[in-house]
Image (tube, rainbow over all chains, first blue to last red; front, side, top):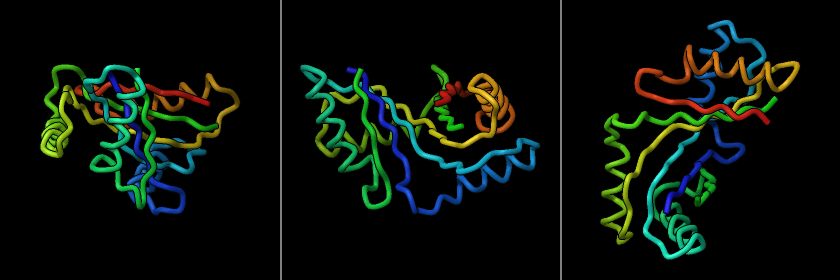
Length: 79
Length: 79
């Protein structure tokens, strides 16, 4: 079963990479760019009997490995 | 206007980071994990009169800076 995970920094956590992208876009001539935040996107296939089981498995993966829950949020979508 | 960009490696491009995640998940006891691919997720606010203009602006940003179109695909969603 295919799952997609989006991991983003929590609000209030500094994102220097996002700031760097914002600066680069502005210096390339893109105006009106603001609040750039960079996160991670992970796709994976997971063996599961149904979508609920796949969702639970991937959420466990996020808690244990994929995300740092102190500073990051994650969102799991199972297809 | 809020835009989300998902940048993924093209099929056939080696993804050592994805392989490392796959190995780590397996050694943590998650079985049946396969085809792990890691990409990037970028959120940003962009000044635009309407959604079409925002979409075009963010696609231009992807072509010029955000993605490496030789090895990466991008997908833009404007809200």
